[in-house]
Length: 385
Ligand code: NZQ
Ligand code: ZN
Image (cartoon, rainbow, N blue to C red; front, side, top):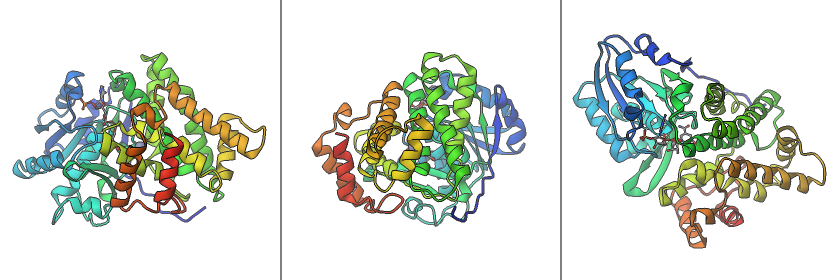
């Protein structure tokens, strides 16, 4: 196992009715900007519940943060924060609202052009405003990590940054808030969490059985409960466990001391920015081809994954790996998520556009061994056409 530094200061408040805890979590004299997305926070009643829990505090609202939050919209929020002397931010929503709030928290105190935060991957962030979150969509793990992904529409760029300064102070996770999610978003959440795990697990072994077994348990939980969330949409326990899996998948705990890949995610971001496909769907259409093309470098972990997660251990190494990749694809499809580029009307000309974007963003040496160059990315995309 590699040496590591594990820091995660986010206070998690988990369970039905926990939004009421906001009164204890948010400083009593804070002037709060509540940030949310399109309409779901309002129409589901969650926004009202949040405002009621904030009691006497001075509250300002900022709605309209879009899925795949944009720099253009978030900079308007930065203006509101400055003009209204806001001193605490509260995100109410899914990964997009939380990621957007992280950017606002860092950009408000940033000296210089805030887009540089993304260009430096967060290395130049030295401070950020305090913020908390009320999660309504389990998927990204943003509620318990220090990462954020922001799109700048005018540049057609979707880039990410990380900084210890943008861990949420707290996150409220009430599983009953996820009952209003459309099926499509439930499925997106399950598949996104699944691939967060594979990015940190399906690499090469470094003798880290704690991380491996934890990752395998999380994957098996998603395989067991994902379909149930679709077939039994009112089951609280299923929602609760999925919410905790998604947080654990990207809170750092399974990723410390082990190699990381993230090539699937980096290619996926280019597909979202070019064609507007949901984040989870972009990575579902890449992962099977990614594992197929890179089976040699990932061989040992792919065999371990096949055996421990899917119970596949008969046949040649290649046959076992083929079957594990097929099972993975079938799982995504069973969640209602298509796994080929052509399912999303993408063709070979789209592949050229994706490759051009990867090149423009310097994504030319991806993966745990930095061996995913543009030629390999092209091969991966072609394998999944
Ligand atoms: O905008 P509203 O009306 O609120 O509707 C949202 C949105 O349209 C809706 N929704 C959320 N909670 C709901 C609900 N509808 C009904 N009931 C509820 N309880 O769901 C739609 C999608 O929301 P969004 O926040 O965009 O989804 P998700 O949580 O999947 O976040 C995706 C974003 O996170 C980034 C992605 O790139 C993408 O921009 N990621 C962030 C990561 C991180 N910070 O660590 C890691 C991920 O890999 C990912 O890249
Ligand atoms: Zn993701």
